[in-house]
Image 1 (tube, rainbow, N blue to C red):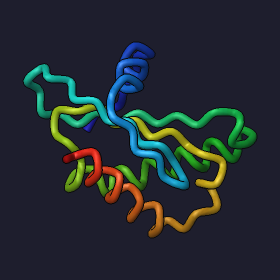
Image 2: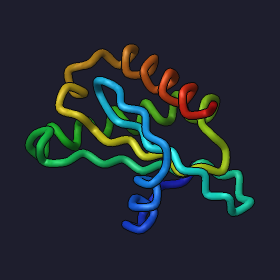
Image 3: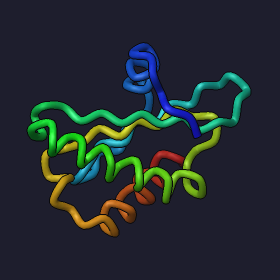
Length: 108
């Protein structure tokens, strides 16, 4: 798993499939470059809260991705998690279930 760093990668992922959930929106786009590496990007806008809230949410998302993506992620695809305002209050186990559900929906 590697981190998305370029803006163009985030914009490309935005053209892929999306699965809205109560705490986040998951974007997944297959790269079709022959590389099976799963790449991850996390973004939380200022609409969600101040810097403390946004950074806390990003830390929770990184932990969530480390927990779920190695088993349930789509190989050779870019995954982008976009934080939603209700995501910071959600229970971590509920976020885990929602991420697995979103990945299952997009894997079809």
